[in-house]
Structure formats: C-alpha cells, structure tokens
Amino acid sequence: MREKVKIMKQKIIIWISVVLLLVVVAFMVKDFFYKPTSPNSNPYDYRLDNLKKIDPSKVCYTEINKIKPDIEQIHGISIDKADNIYITGKGKVAVFDGQYAPKTSFKIDSEAKCIAIGDDGKIYLGIQDHIEVFETNGKLVKAWNAVNNKSIITSIAISEKYIYVADAGNRIVYQYKKDGDLVKEIGRKNPEKGILGFVIPSPYFDLLIGREGELWVVNPGRHALESYNENGDQISSWAKASMGIDGFCGCCNPSNIAMLSNGSFVTSEKAIERVKVHLPNGDFKCVVATPENFESGTKGIDLAVDSKDNIYVLDPVKNIVSVFEQKK
Image 1: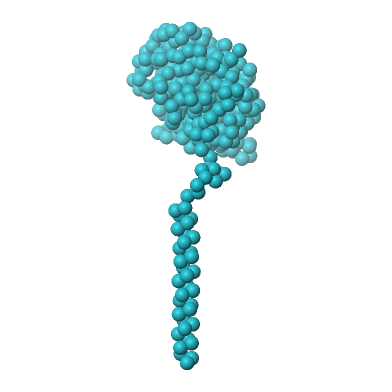
Image 2: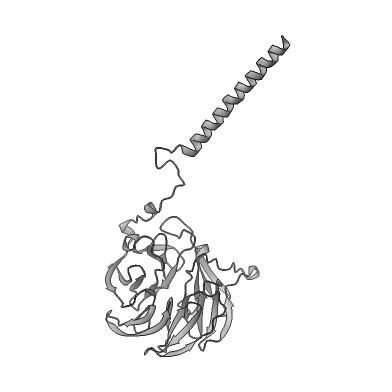
C-alpha cells in the first residue's frame, strides 16, 4: 500500500513539473515571437524618420544658388577675404568668384579632404595624413611631413600666427608655424587642466578660428564645441546632447562647423542630415537646411560663410554646393 502511495506521489510531481515547464515555454514563446499590434507601444523606440521632420517655422534660411564644380568628388570648401570660393576633392581645386562664376582651377595628384586659404593667398590642402601648400596658380610650395601613419587630416584653420590642423586618426589638434614646423599638440586629455580629451568615433573632426582669434574645435563624441587659446589652454565650451532639434544626437555630432560674423555657429550633422544655427552660447536659433535637402545617409557636409553671412553647404553625395541666405 505504501509503495502505491509513493508511486502516485511521484506521478503527481512529474505531472506538475511538466505543466510548469509548459508554462515557462509558453512565456518564452510570447517574449520571442509576440509583436505588439501598436507601433507606439515602446516609448523608447525613437525613429529617425520622425526626428527628420522639421517644423517649417524653424527654418530661417532659403536657398539662393547652386555651384556645380567640375570635380569628380568634392569634400572641402573655404572662402577667402575677397569672397572667392574654393572647392576641392578628388584631383582638383576649383575657384569661383563672389557671383559664383568659375574663376580658375588646377589639378592635384591626390584627393584632398579639406582646404583653407591664408591671407597671403596660399592654399592649404589636407591630403590623408599631411598638408600640402599651393600657390593660386597650382604650383606646389611645400608638402609637410606627416606626424605618423595614423594621421587622418580632416580640417585646417589659419590664425594670424599659426595654422591649426585636426587629426581624427590621432584624436588631436596640431599647432604649426606658417612654415610647417610643429609647435604643440592641443586638446590631449589633462584632468588637472579640465581637458577631457577628444572623442572621435568616426573621421569627422572640425575646427575654426573665432572672432577674437581663439580656436574652436568640435568634440563630436561629446556633442560639444570647445575653445582654446594659442597656449593650448581650454577657455570655454558648450555642449548639447539631445534627440530634439535644439541639440545633437548619435555617436558623433556635429560633423562640421562654420561661424557667422556675430559669433553664432553654423553646424551640420550626419544620420539626421541637417544644417542649423546656434547662438554664441550654444542655444539653438534656427534651421538652415533640412533633411529634405539631402539624400538619406549623406555625411561630410562641409560648411563655409562669406562676408555677407551667406552660408555655403557642400553636399558630397549630390556633388554640389548650395548657397543659403537668411530670410528677410
């Protein structure tokens, strides 16, 4: 009798275990294969399509012209003090006058990713890991030595005394004398001086010279802009990480910057392809170009500003430069 009771208990335990196992399997199937009927059921499911929709009332610029340079692939733009427009890329530099008419051009032996123009008219090109300097007639003046084989030159800015070069490969900014002699590195991590260091997840690393001669550098991985004096000391910064139009999101934005005469910043982004204006303190002002102006996936939207504060937007996918003017 006791043996029968024991067997019965074992059967009950087995059946209970089987039922529990079936319940667990059912929950697993639901977790793996059940899809909610409402697409909005996940409040954290941010969609880029929604973020790319911009209220037209926030757009304060209008496109007034397009420049189509005869260059196979364009990457960089710069404007000199006479409003001549310099565009470079694969195998060529093209120059346009202030009325957007072709002025001159010359061939180069490689692909330039960025360009800057000195007050003396010399043209500085960032070519992979080094700088090359040209006269306006296309004569090569000098090729600077690369710092090392990790260098990826992405931006050049020229002050009265120095030339600053952004190196995305080594995640650092170099300060050079005008003859190409390296003076110092700027922006290397230094907690004692409050310098956090540049976070550069992708080869987009831009800089410019501000109204007072200060150096402004994008720290894209931190969604920040930082300013430095010529001694390499950080003097100010602002950052805005946001999924909204007022800030920057993704791994590394903004990708490129320029500056208006009042000290406001023009910024471009990737992933959400757009160009905006931020006030000198970093507050959002308005939109220049919306994602509708670009093909999806466009990266490397270089920027420049002329003496009339018109904004030039280089589109490397459409291979054009669009000129925007502030709405009246």
